[in-house]
Length: 458
Image 1 (cartoon, one colour):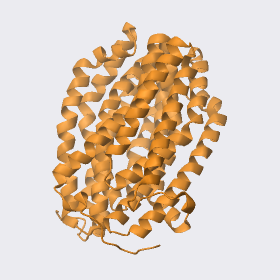
Image 2 (image 1 turned 180 degrees about the vertical axis):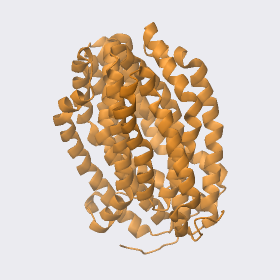
Image 3 (image 1 turned 120 degrees about the vertical axis):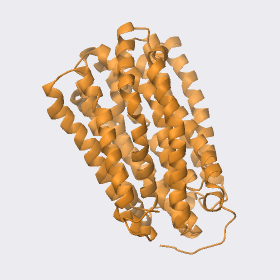
Image 4 (image 1 turned 90 degrees about the horizontal axis):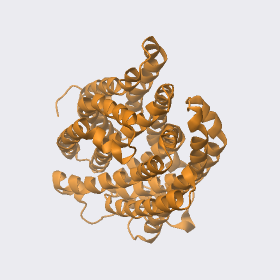
């Protein structure tokens, strides 16, 4: 690899106030997550209000399936984020430029592959999730069109990851703000005005994803920073691709396994009929409020730890983790209370069906008391991955979340087949993962990489 180092300008992540700079970095990511989720949320609102609860349940049923394939590549993209943040933190600008070219080329080719594969496998994937017959046609139409735009989703996430690795979280937010506005307008035109149904909602999402991909690529092409994208030099460097895959493959597998376990849960929910599917869908859309903040915390931990690890500043590595944990509790406690007390009321955004709203409120009351435990999983995992240790966090997640959920759905749920037994699988696995990550963070071998013994206090 090219390891040439050059002097660069002041870097607030490695030199500034961690608390101030992290909140500046985190807020645009939270807003970006919010507007990115608006793609599916607006689809769900429009579909639920103008088509019906069957279409609402169908659109939500596709979520776990589309994430199964798309999130694998998005997880791989995180390998580029970790690598580039370390290179920039160590002022290895030549290497950072080559890593950007490789990451972008890989995202384009991988995104095309997922688009084609998803379109072809859509019927088989839907059958595997027990989609209610009245929902099937809606789900198939939505899924195939959505997969058609998967390449744009992957390209955007890779480009946004490159910008975030350099500490720029604002422009990805602006791009998603623009694309989300386009999505809302097109949803309202395609569904209630033109009567295109769920196909219109899916098309609106794909078009808005295309816009966000164009905007982020344009930024990378026009910047003068070390992460500049140059089309003439666009190619896959084997060394950098190997490093990106080494860092990103565990997170890609982790994301896919998450989605696979969620496919099993979706199948369990669907077995209770269209009302259960719709209620679970409404709860899931509101539940995403929590995950906006969780994702921002995880990305912040990875970026701040990655750059300070690359700069060789051990104290700032641990200070970054502590600050991130503090922000996490400040954010999640009020959100949990909001969903506990007002989840059913907020659900009226999606439907006016009384039974569906009751089921949605039931789900959120089971979730809300346990959201805080996810802080340990996401912040500790993101921090450890920032040092380049990605395989063992993947194993922890695999066993605590994915395997345990699969065991729950395949062996425990059949003993007491109720809707509540499906829903409670989430808090149980959140707690198991948090427990294991606390142990690994304090005593894991990853601590040797930053020059301390696994059992020593930082």
